[in-house]
Image 1 (tube, each protein chain N blue to C red):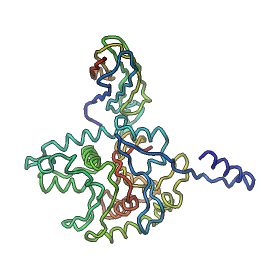
Image 2 (spheres, one colour; image 1 turned 60 degrees about the horizontal axis):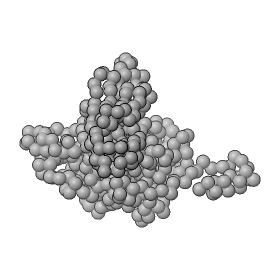
Image 3 (tube, one colour; image 1 turned 90 degrees about the vertical axis):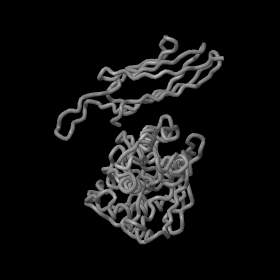
Image 4 (spheres, chains in turn red, blue; image 1 turned 120 degrees about the vertical axis):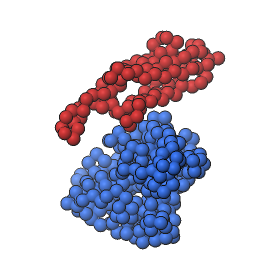
Length: 109
Length: 284
């Protein structure tokens, strides 16, 4: 979709200390590979999300680099152990330099 | 399933190894979306060539099926969200949005799409959700009709159909002249066209369940449209898909919303009677 990329994140609101939780993320993004041509035969410039990171209270949880073969609307699902209450921070870095972010609080009892 | 195919293979080897059919059964699996079970198998209505109508979901790979089952992973849900924004956006000379008249779509549109196409007494022809939206826009909102497959048209149609998720498809053929459009659609369904000389029924009836190269042929049901297709990584409308099928037979494509395609939509939708609306379905 042409609209501005919009991140969606699913993190449980609460967890027990030391519990392993499932985190799901998805961002709407065209992931233009740079391999396609338009009607005039000109190459459509590459525009993808090239990096995704997740931090918990400032500590890295998960990160990865992305390459042009990844489909539109990249989806990530991963697990994390939560020792304490805090904040998950997610960021997606676009080829044009934009950074899309999201934050999710979790209460650990 | 493995046992049966092994047995088939063994018998076939004894007779001749060349008679092994490419037929593969649709899977025996349940589709549950956000706790609601979808009807993916339903007894066929009277006059139907099959005993049971099957959702295309049963013919897809496990990864694709999982995408549809999880509304978070399903990229089609992005269009539902976009459609909701459009629903609440004022457009046109009369200063109205969809919500101005229809309020909360979760209530006003619930189950509605399962009964489309419907007879439109003004136009004297069946109309689908896309045409109903255009009718509202031009007559009640003072806005312009959408261009075919405009992103807004696909998003709003997806959003409205999503309000009927799970509702079984049921057309009322007694309205107006619906029956004669059904007849016309049926005739089209069985008419071979194009350089490849194929009818809809060649693939989706006679060869249902077989593989056409890497593609597992389904019954060609309409209940999941607009559908998120991984091939396009985009939402695909029903008329776009019907045109795509016709193009693949190397025939000339009828215009979107033309009488030909509306008749076909009426008939094809009827062939999926009893299946849940699965919009936004995910397909290959």
